[in-house]
Image 1 (cartoon, rainbow, N blue to C red):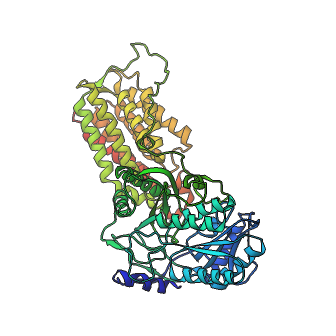
Image 2: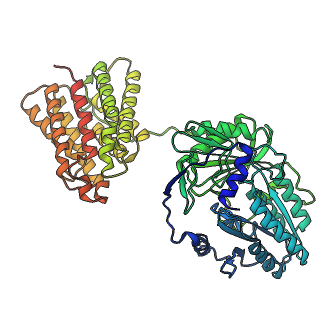
Image 3: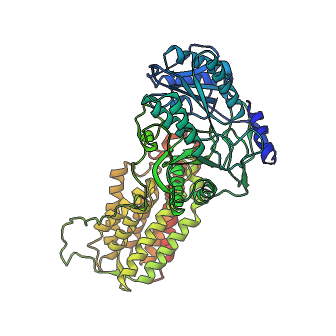
Length: 615
């Protein structure tokens, strides 16, 4: 069955929505579109010495090299584009063979028959064909089973229709098959490898197939080789209850849902079929386009929502296992684990835990997941064993709380307001996120200082303490290169300014800052002229020293420093990068534009100078 036929089959039952196509083809790292599935199989087999393929120019059949002689074999398959299903699920403990069609197209009956003939010749004692419920797949595999049975090779077929977003229809089509099929593979495969008969394996597979429930959600349509890009989910849209071939979902929501909102939608739908309070095995299946960060967040939200609704998660599998090319979505599958598998002595949980050689079968934590697994172990860290300071060397000047508050407020706001400008400069040299990072630096340092001010109860803070708490907070929250370097700089500045007293405040402060900048040079490797934030900070330091030696007050000293930082940042536009991400891109990309880090340094220094009162 072609994609067009699938769309017609499913959309007619829902109430059709137009499938809008963008005439631009999607970009994919392929050679010949017509031959991409065969090439993909060849590439995959280079990583699996335990598998082989049928030597046939047309049939796309992958088999275990050592067939399960004297045991029941398992076969599955369907259109390509769902990898690792199904060729990636061939191996001991799961499938004996997988039969692939072209992209999103059912394999020919003849290809399935060829797989069955090889299994029969390998002395397998019968075969179970496990098929997702799509018309083309159902016809191809069922027809092959009929012919094999006629020729003396006993075969059974189990259809999996686990899409609980769809209602049962009056016709014969039934609900779609989704990621729940892999649980049938795993359980039936374990029973087959344990030597159970075809009747026992088939009955267990039917019971699992009837009990398993799946529902999916996506923020984008999948891109299919050679076809125009679908624009159905462009803009602020989320689809709930979709198939795995680009078919429109059951519900179209005119907004981009958050991970928490998607979790609520999926669990609300699946709980209509799978009763709350049930002990379940759960699969969180990446449809192909979600990043590791996204799948981590949605996993947390789905587990939390399932637990809130009373589900008891006994096994949790998280992986891209039945994908839809690059669809940016996820599906949730639940299987009640207390159902009987029939005549076998093996329990469902034992079958799930049974060994398999398939590398794509995800591992699961054994035992019940509860709220404890969502909590971090918290330990109190000891302080540094620093050398004791004499009372004469301790800093004695505490800066007025109002002045501190004004300074951190203005710095935080300035960095936040300049975030887009910093990002724009960073995009010439990297991934354009420096503004976001510097916003976190400003917010983290402000939060740390505010918390310390609250603890000081109106007593003010020393410069060393301000640097210390800002460094700790940035180190905990900011991340990124800028976060690491600012945390280091402020940490060193804190220790280097512990001896600052009332009489030598400005001189001692500038000495401490110089020590900190030198430490950044040693650790980061950059120096003045390398086009980094040091090209704003060193000129600022030198200008402040000059102003201080000329007897200027704090306001005037910091104003001179800010002006020098601004000029230093501007000068980076003509510098050839010798440090940082800018060294990875052509020089022409960055020349004529300031370094993002230097510009950000001038922003917060200007804000700091503006916050100081005229005295």
